[in-house]
Image (tube, rainbow over all chains, first blue to last red; front, top):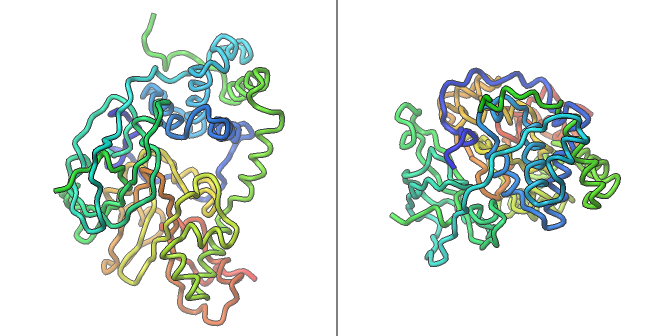
Length: 204
Length: 202
């Protein structure tokens, strides 16, 4: 989906916040959000892909105003309800008030099972896809050309796994792009490498 | 009624989290103490793990070769693996190349070797800007690289998890692995800092 989560290359953001502090957690409730994601993966309830997509489905205004762990928590609340583990009414009764939820899920996106694959050095183009569901090829490389520099092991295709569908596994490729091919004003010599699933790529 | 759900005042996040835990425990899905058990694991996912790997690679060329060829095995050899560490790739910095890691779509990181990501790494500013204007972003983070160093940004958009292998700084000849590891920070492993000799401990 063309959502706010796909922020690579978006402009209008300010300076990087100060990084005086490397601690991942800043409130005692925060680790629970990750623990629910890990529990779901351990029990086969839903995948990290589905967790990511649930976070993407948070309404954009809320996505922007929530902290990172508030978004993870909202994703886990949404999936717990969608999977019938709890009801929204039950949660809101326990919480004593309204709890934010992500928007409902659209259709998934099937893997291309007839794909010939690539080898290192191949020149590829990222398909200019705009599926309504979960996609892990960021907008800033769609329609752009790059070169395969490494082949990563088989992994579940996010268009399926992110939607709770039986997921096919396929390789992903580390595709190197010349930054100037992505953004005209980028400096000479700068490169970006994106880890892209096979189904998102075509050979040139 | 307003369609703008941002106008609803939700209960605080800590209350939401408590309600979710209680509901999942009541449903028999989450065992008691489950969160605490993970918290203990999170405490062991620290950048000192990645620092040990780097220090070993700086002092043992066979290990360095393994790390650059098959970082997943090299990390496992020192006892580091698990969730978000199933396929790790080490990115070698050179005199003319600085590697930098980001996850523009969420905040994926090699948890077992870098630790869980810090706030700034998850910020919208870092996620949006570092792919497009890496040199300026590094400058804002305190790393002003010479023009002769090209910057390569690695976007963590699938299941590969990265760690940067920084260059061993001059002035560390004869140091122990522990001393070397003490100058490798989380920022160095992400690629937004270089190890500083003056930060050594031990």
